[in-house]
Figure 1 (tube, rainbow, N blue to C red):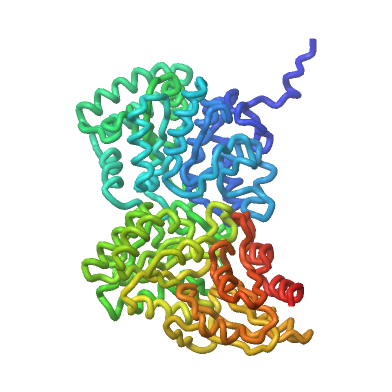
Figure 2 (figure 1 turned 180 degrees about the vertical axis):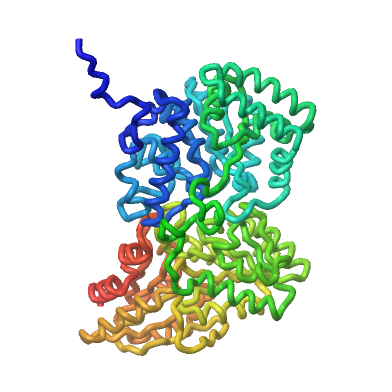
Length: 623
């Protein structure tokens, strides 16, 4: 019989692009998996350099993802990634290599787990600290259905600063059911991890005696090949004894978890040996691994915050194209100038110092920029306390994350009438990140809160003036602006309290807009003027309270009133104007009853007729 083995590709020779299922990993030796990890990193770096995306977090979790898929059986076994922006290696290992180049593009692959994209993705996880609660639900559902699959929650040390993680750990520990929590410890969320928990994990890492012994045992175990799992069992018992002697009062064990680690999160052989042993154990287990954010790409290793979420860049040198001034940067510069004049102004971030522009004032006033970690509800209540103590706090959050603080805004800020300023970044439709990061709801839900003033600038100059005004009101204020380059006004804006501004006169149609859609509205008005439809344009500036006097005066005698807002129509500014102007035809333009998909900002604006062509079309159809 002819030997035909030479015509068959062995598992150890398999390339990443030939991997169609994670089940194929089980036949690949640990040594060859290191080569696979390099391929995954190369593919991620190449793709993100072209499309933009989350780089550093995915490079740091590559070996762990390989080890998980080698030991467990996805999708029967459930992997739940906290936040989800570290799922790129998981996607490459689960048959999505060919679509990976469409990352974060319209109609392409999501940058987060997406259940409709693959059976290996079980949840939309785009916000931090939710994975362990989801895991608890999976564990209880498994028990009630009489199933026996494995549930693994992968959570970063940054996500553990979120209160929901602690609630879930407390519940999981009390259940006593089989569950594995993997603490991926890279000392980072987006900004460096802060708070007492980071000190706790530092103690785990820095206990010199334990760490030295642990490292030596780990290195020894990882070299034992087929004996590794058996020896790990002995090693776990040895290391457990060392912990009892050297590291008393284990925090996680007090919550009901058996704690193992810390181990090297870039040593595939070691992690595979640990996971195989842990897979056979009963009860809640926490495995603590140490990884390096950005591993394998020098520029991401040196700048993990800069390369957390990144626009396209030059792969060879890490350089990014210079962009126009964003609204985030305008906010940071304006706030720094105000902090220079008033030492009572303090800024609060929830692990978003860089993303919200607070790095600018932080460089000048480090003690007055407070990063509480991924703890949005706490940041709002903290601001209430600071305001009560006579300070002037501003809470800088992305709109999608402010949603997590809804109760605190009502209970602590509104009820107490505290002068807290909310700087709401990434408001409206948000490019690239998809459904979990859309900021379309803030205008609607904030407007129902008593004593809340809501402003939305249409230019960088208006944002500067609105921020000054906000600190002078002595009551709760929200200022919302998009993830976009700022509209640089030719002249400084004069923002009058609670007053709209008529920017164009016209006899046929009134267009009332709010926020950073000014260019689109005026371009539409110019287009329509060329065909004899004259539009009056009213920049509302204030979503609450609405300047009804100006709205009614401008609406008088018009055939049609159009409202334009970069947000959900339901409960928004347009609906309120429609309810008030009962004798006039009012048409609302905004986001329909859906959560926007992935797309560029221009594509999403066009989807909801928020671009100039769409606004003009709606007016023509209704005039």
